[in-house]
Image (cartoon, rainbow, N blue to C red; front, side, top):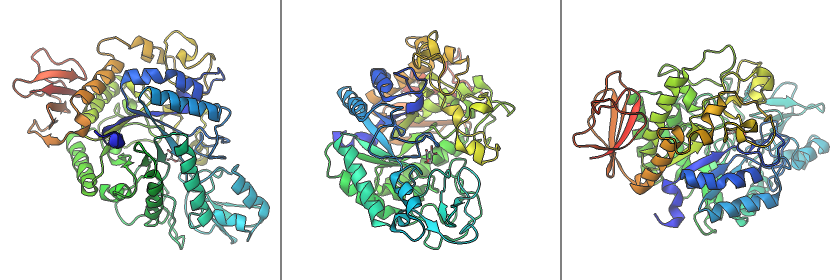
Length: 535
Ligand code: GLC
């Protein structure tokens, strides 16, 4: 694959800086901690890393509330540390994608502080969405719960689709547009290979701010099919990404834009990755699909068809920092709706079943053509922390939902590297910012390296075989299979997943390359197992 199109078949590993590696021992992850561990990601076999935000921020939404788009929060290091991280990654042959949060700033951003100080009617307020009135301007709800409007003592209201500390920007304002073009250049000039664009479907709101009383759900399920709600997926967003694309195309080496857009159906999502817009979009319909063969096959087909129609590569993803980890999600009966967090007193997943299915799901995903996203810790088979005591919860959704949604902290717990070290090798401190459960020891990297059959070794072998057989740039051809199995060929590799209660057969003469669990004595594929074979 030509280097400029590296992303078309890339495996991209998401680093959540707060929870990856703590270099300075303050209990929170940081950039030097990440840089020191990058060789291990090379060893795992990924092509690129995407870092969740590390910018100066009051951290009311774990850094997705950005106070300065051109800096690094002292909690995570310095701009010099970011440069070192980018340089080290490049030396190792890894690309670096950073997170860009254009829908809203932090209320600590100098623009918002200026808007508050300048008062109603001022040009400073024009950069955000301020309105007058005795009542909230409309019925919109915040994604995290409660009204999406906040009234100030001077009587004006401002819009915040997320936390009250995340005021929405006014993207009809030329200064907002110019500012983000400049921010793109700032990071492109420092050498980043791309941007993951946060809430890419939210920047433009319907001009009338039409009422919409259904919850503004994005993280807990996709909007039903139908006209897009007035705050999401408006036509005007596309013009913005065309402008951004033109800037990226001025740079060498294949710099990319990745849309976080909770949009459906797939044809709507594919509009974000038309040839002159973004390069990739996260495939949330795939993430949301139940562990059932017909549903998975349908979403694979519709994703490939929608992206093919616009010439884009299809992406695949099972976990990220906003959803219950797939090793836990899949531990509930197939078809259970994805829940917004799991806590003490909630129904608990079957961890053994969840891990077994997660391994099979990952092997199925990595067998598909296109680009795949991994979330830190999934290569260890990490489950959600489903027993996190509520007093530790930091996700604004927990408070704003009136404690009806546990929120996303359970997938954000610092990851274990060494079973017998303080904070399981996350860093020198005894305690990490979110407490790690005692079961983390058995998932630690040093308990899995070179251990045949460990989840880590399964990921490492799969990534190596995926590269060797060029599965990322292959083509999918479905094969006939038992009704409870999915079978396809991708180039020279046959991938079979058995969802049924009965063992499934492998094609005649197949030589097994990889299997998510040992096969039955008669060579057949047990329940909830994926096999890669060459025939
Ligand atoms: C995105 C992020 C999420 C954040 C939200 C608001 O969905 O992935 O973590 O809370 O945007 O910025």
